[in-house]
Figure 1: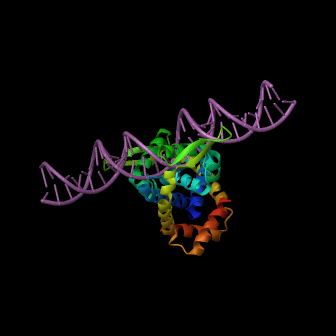
Figure 2: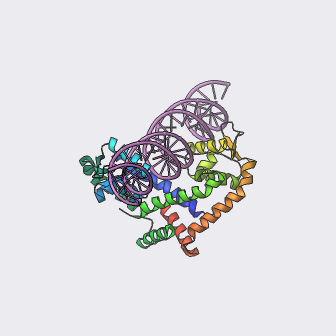
Figure 3: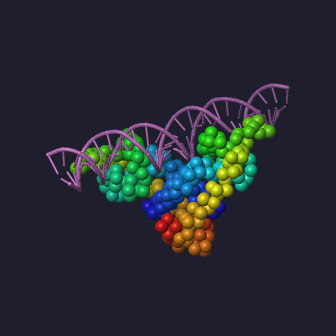
Length: 132
Length: 132
DNA sequence: CTCGATTGTTTACCTAAGTAAATAATATAC
DNA sequence: GTATATTATTTACTTAGGTAAACAATCGAG
């Protein structure tokens, strides 16, 4: 059995826990942040656009968006095609975003600090190559 | 925002889904397999030994062991210290193990097939270095 | 020897992710 | 133009992971 796989799973959990800790003061969890950030970067998007881009199944996004809606980060608006719901960030969310972005950026830099720029690029390429 | 992190999260999900698919014919899920395999390699172990070694919290292991027990893979035995529960594989589990090991090994080899031996070693070292 | 601290496990409650199937609206084939 | 197929979203149910707190057994200080 290849020890690479437990290592990847374990490191993934470790990263998620650490990111959640960074996000907690802001009232978000990691999966919620990934959607808020996606909407911030790309503007209002349908549920399908979100789940296909983030490579997460539709029911997962439905649930997380429902939580974000209850917490006031996001609104569901009916699209032209009345099957689809367009998800938009609330003004409150846009207000809070800069501080969260700064905290996450700091977290990411710390997480990657042990690697040189070259090693970071190499790691990215290796994971992408393995992913195929 | 560093694209390495979404890539790692996404690839982790992809790997978990693929591993679950490999394990499904054998009636196991990935987290269950990690415990069964750990007990196979190390012999009967207490819950604490399992969660500390696998770097998963105790309640998570309690739950997964409970499922494995219901499914007949594992038994709980009271330890000398009567607080602790020793988890042992059942004979049925030991019988099924060789076929599962072969399937998982094949899966792992396919997953790393795009990387040379040197790249695999490099990837392992980079993740370990980043993990700290 | 007894009482408080520690340890091992479990329970309760939460987020996150998946599959399968239901539902509602739109497209398409005829 | 209507019946069928497809698409977008949701619901129901499952596994997996986490934190906080309860509980029971053991350890240790005095």
